[in-house]
Amino acid sequence: MIDGLPPALLPQRLWALVRRWALAWGNVVGLGAVVLVLLCSPSSYRRRARKRLALQIYLDTVPVLAGFTALAALLSLVVTHIVVVTAHSYGLTRYALEMVVRVLVLELIPLTAALFVAMRTVIPGAARLAQLRRSGALQALRARGGDPLRMEFLPRVLGGAYASITLAALSCVVALLMAYLGVYGFNTAGFSAYTRMFGQVFTPSITLVFALKTLLFSLTVALVPMAASLHASHADPQPGRHDAASQGGLARLFAVLLLIELFSLLGNYY
Image (cartoon, rainbow, N blue to C red; front, side, top):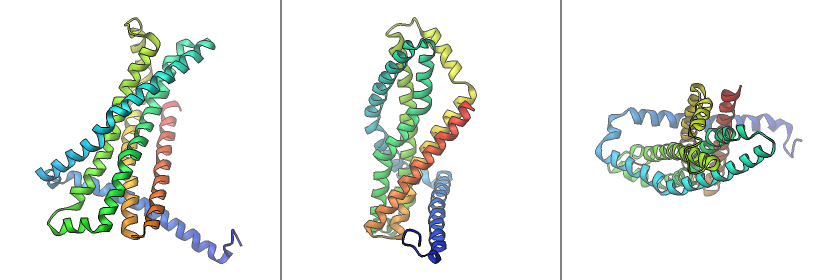
């Protein structure tokens, strides 16, 4: 007996676990393929679909843009002050600003933006889409001649990806500005040294890794929760099973984000 499970049933349980794991990741890959096909289809850019897409991007990005940017600015000032004071006490002041830029801009801000978008827009949007599917609203839309994939699914995926990239890009710019102000204040005395340090940090290889990481973060937060929610609503309409599947999707989301962050660290420093 292993945790109350007869040894004869252990292989079956392991096979069921591997099967569920493969099915969940297969749904994510399949969802990404559907998005790619829809993006390449001219019918996805007709007037009605284009209007729905623009509205979803606006709703996912604009309401949270100011709040997250202010949060990033505050975080940048606090982290800059802590790092500068600590480095000064150890006689490492010349490395403080570079450390702030590497920690904040290269690592913390993109990951924080992706998690913020996932929790604030993508996961609630995926839950809403699953609810529409269980209630039959998507079938009713299809019966009226509409395409649920183009009108409901694609806008939510692209809206989440766009919001993640936009928040990360704008917050990184704000973090760079706050880091400069936190060290040099409101003057241009340190502009030359700051731009030199910026060029030393953002080499072509590190810039490429940073751009790829931000893009992969955005695709992950847009696809993984949506695939988990849609699969749960289609496979089992019971609320308890749906919640369990959504929690599994959240765990997969964190796992993928951590793997992307790990590989980016390996690409930047090894």
